[in-house]
Length: 179
Image 1: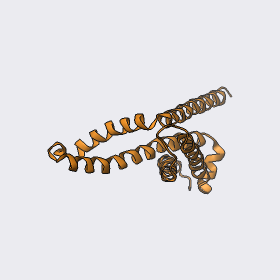
Image 2: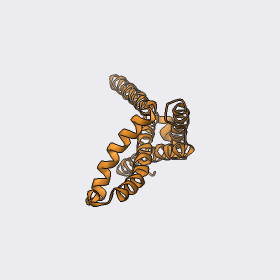
Image 3: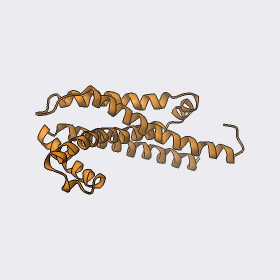
Protein backbone atom coordinates (compact mmCIF):
# COMPACT_ATOMS: atom_id res chain seq x y z
CA UNK A 1 0.00 0.00 0.00
CA UNK A 2 2.82 2.40 0.91
CA UNK A 3 4.55 1.64 -2.41
CA UNK A 4 1.39 2.57 -4.35
CA UNK A 5 1.13 5.87 -2.48
CA UNK A 6 4.77 6.73 -3.28
CA UNK A 7 4.22 5.88 -6.95
CA UNK A 8 1.15 8.13 -7.09
CA UNK A 9 3.06 10.98 -5.46
CA UNK A 10 5.96 10.54 -7.89
CA UNK A 11 3.59 10.40 -10.87
CA UNK A 12 1.79 13.61 -9.87
CA UNK A 13 5.13 15.28 -9.13
CA UNK A 14 6.32 14.38 -12.64
CA UNK A 15 3.06 15.71 -14.11
CA UNK A 16 3.45 18.92 -12.13
CA UNK A 17 7.00 19.39 -13.38
CA UNK A 18 5.89 18.73 -16.96
CA UNK A 19 3.07 21.26 -16.65
CA UNK A 20 5.55 23.86 -15.38
CA UNK A 21 7.92 23.06 -18.27
CA UNK A 22 5.09 23.30 -20.81
CA UNK A 23 3.97 26.66 -19.44
CA UNK A 24 7.56 27.91 -19.30
CA UNK A 25 8.12 26.88 -22.92
CA UNK A 26 4.85 28.42 -24.12
CA UNK A 27 5.78 31.68 -22.37
CA UNK A 28 9.22 31.50 -24.02
CA UNK A 29 7.63 31.13 -27.45
CA UNK A 30 5.25 33.99 -26.64
CA UNK A 31 8.26 36.10 -25.64
CA UNK A 32 9.99 35.47 -28.97
CA UNK A 33 6.77 36.46 -30.76
CA UNK A 34 6.43 39.62 -28.67
CA UNK A 35 9.75 40.94 -29.97
CA UNK A 36 9.24 43.64 -32.56
CA UNK A 37 10.45 43.07 -36.12
CA UNK A 38 13.81 44.73 -35.50
CA UNK A 39 14.55 42.70 -32.34
CA UNK A 40 13.48 39.46 -33.99
CA UNK A 41 15.59 40.16 -37.08
CA UNK A 42 18.61 41.03 -34.93
CA UNK A 43 18.46 37.71 -33.07
CA UNK A 44 17.92 35.83 -36.30
CA UNK A 45 20.84 37.63 -37.96
CA UNK A 46 23.21 36.80 -35.09
CA UNK A 47 22.32 33.12 -35.37
CA UNK A 48 22.42 33.18 -39.17
CA UNK A 49 25.93 34.67 -39.31
CA UNK A 50 27.18 31.82 -37.10
CA UNK A 51 25.52 29.25 -39.36
CA UNK A 52 26.85 30.97 -42.49
CA UNK A 53 30.43 30.80 -41.22
CA UNK A 54 30.04 27.10 -40.39
CA UNK A 55 28.49 26.26 -43.76
CA UNK A 56 30.78 28.45 -45.86
CA UNK A 57 34.16 29.05 -44.20
CA UNK A 58 35.23 31.31 -47.10
CA UNK A 59 32.14 33.53 -46.67
CA UNK A 60 34.26 36.60 -45.86
CA UNK A 61 36.09 36.22 -49.18
CA UNK A 62 32.86 36.62 -51.18
CA UNK A 63 31.87 39.97 -52.64
CA UNK A 64 29.42 42.04 -50.60
CA UNK A 65 26.62 41.20 -53.05
CA UNK A 66 27.41 37.45 -52.91
CA UNK A 67 27.51 37.62 -49.11
CA UNK A 68 24.12 39.32 -49.04
CA UNK A 69 22.53 36.75 -51.35
CA UNK A 70 24.01 33.81 -49.44
CA UNK A 71 23.11 35.31 -46.06
CA UNK A 72 19.48 35.89 -47.09
CA UNK A 73 19.13 32.33 -48.37
CA UNK A 74 20.49 30.86 -45.16
CA UNK A 75 18.49 33.29 -43.00
CA UNK A 76 15.18 31.97 -44.33
CA UNK A 77 16.11 28.41 -43.34
CA UNK A 78 17.47 29.47 -39.95
CA UNK A 79 14.22 31.27 -39.11
CA UNK A 80 12.04 28.37 -40.23
CA UNK A 81 14.24 25.83 -38.43
CA UNK A 82 13.80 27.97 -35.31
CA UNK A 83 10.01 27.71 -35.66
CA UNK A 84 10.22 23.96 -36.22
CA UNK A 85 12.53 23.48 -33.23
CA UNK A 86 10.49 25.62 -30.83
CA UNK A 87 7.38 23.63 -31.53
CA UNK A 88 9.28 20.34 -31.67
CA UNK A 89 10.19 20.93 -28.04
CA UNK A 90 6.59 21.88 -27.24
CA UNK A 91 5.23 18.73 -28.92
CA UNK A 92 7.80 16.64 -27.06
CA UNK A 93 6.77 18.15 -23.70
CA UNK A 94 3.05 17.69 -24.40
CA UNK A 95 3.43 14.05 -25.35
CA UNK A 96 5.60 13.47 -22.25
CA UNK A 97 2.75 14.83 -20.16
CA UNK A 98 0.08 12.85 -21.99
CA UNK A 99 2.02 9.60 -21.71
CA UNK A 100 1.96 9.86 -17.91
CA UNK A 101 -1.66 8.75 -18.12
CA UNK A 102 -2.23 4.99 -18.39
CA UNK A 103 -5.35 5.43 -20.51
CA UNK A 104 -3.44 7.59 -22.99
CA UNK A 105 -0.72 4.95 -23.29
CA UNK A 106 -3.44 2.37 -23.95
CA UNK A 107 -4.89 4.55 -26.71
CA UNK A 108 -1.43 4.93 -28.23
CA UNK A 109 -1.22 1.18 -28.65
CA UNK A 110 -4.64 1.29 -30.32
CA UNK A 111 -3.97 4.22 -32.63
CA UNK A 112 -2.53 7.68 -32.81
CA UNK A 113 -4.84 9.67 -30.53
CA UNK A 114 -2.09 10.99 -28.21
CA UNK A 115 0.02 12.04 -31.19
CA UNK A 116 -2.93 13.83 -32.77
CA UNK A 117 -3.83 15.47 -29.47
CA UNK A 118 -0.30 16.82 -28.90
CA UNK A 119 -0.09 17.98 -32.52
CA UNK A 120 -3.49 19.69 -32.30
CA UNK A 121 -2.48 21.54 -29.15
CA UNK A 122 0.69 22.71 -30.90
CA UNK A 123 -1.29 23.79 -33.97
CA UNK A 124 -3.78 25.79 -31.90
CA UNK A 125 -0.96 27.47 -29.99
CA UNK A 126 0.87 28.19 -33.27
CA UNK A 127 -2.27 29.81 -34.69
CA UNK A 128 -2.74 31.95 -31.59
CA UNK A 129 0.96 32.84 -31.67
CA UNK A 130 0.74 34.00 -35.29
CA UNK A 131 -2.38 36.05 -34.51
CA UNK A 132 -0.45 37.59 -31.60
CA UNK A 133 2.37 38.52 -34.01
CA UNK A 134 -0.16 40.47 -36.06
CA UNK A 135 -0.33 42.97 -33.18
CA UNK A 136 3.45 43.36 -32.82
CA UNK A 137 5.25 46.18 -34.66
CA UNK A 138 7.16 44.95 -37.68
CA UNK A 139 5.71 41.43 -37.48
CA UNK A 140 2.91 39.74 -39.36
CA UNK A 141 1.10 36.40 -39.12
CA UNK A 142 2.09 33.76 -41.66
CA UNK A 143 0.21 30.59 -42.55
CA UNK A 144 3.52 28.95 -43.54
CA UNK A 145 4.80 29.46 -39.98
CA UNK A 146 1.70 27.74 -38.55
CA UNK A 147 2.34 24.80 -40.87
CA UNK A 148 6.03 24.63 -39.90
CA UNK A 149 5.20 24.99 -36.20
CA UNK A 150 2.59 22.24 -36.40
CA UNK A 151 5.02 19.96 -38.23
CA UNK A 152 7.62 20.65 -35.53
CA UNK A 153 5.11 19.77 -32.81
CA UNK A 154 4.16 16.58 -34.65
CA UNK A 155 7.74 15.41 -35.10
CA UNK A 156 8.73 16.34 -31.53
CA UNK A 157 5.85 14.24 -30.22
CA UNK A 158 6.52 11.44 -32.70
CA UNK A 159 10.17 11.31 -31.64
CA UNK A 160 9.23 10.62 -28.03
CA UNK A 161 6.53 8.13 -28.98
CA UNK A 162 8.96 6.13 -31.10
CA UNK A 163 11.43 5.99 -28.23
CA UNK A 164 8.65 5.01 -25.82
CA UNK A 165 7.44 2.30 -28.20
CA UNK A 166 10.93 0.90 -28.54
CA UNK A 167 11.41 0.64 -24.77
CA UNK A 168 7.84 -0.55 -24.17
CA UNK A 169 8.28 -3.34 -26.69
CA UNK A 170 11.57 -4.40 -25.18
CA UNK A 171 9.98 -4.42 -21.73
CA UNK A 172 7.13 -6.63 -22.95
CA UNK A 173 9.52 -8.95 -24.80
CA UNK A 174 11.73 -9.34 -21.73
CA UNK A 175 8.64 -10.24 -19.70
CA UNK A 176 7.67 -12.81 -22.34
CA UNK A 177 4.44 -10.99 -23.26
CA UNK A 178 3.05 -10.52 -26.72
CA UNK A 179 2.80 -6.90 -27.74
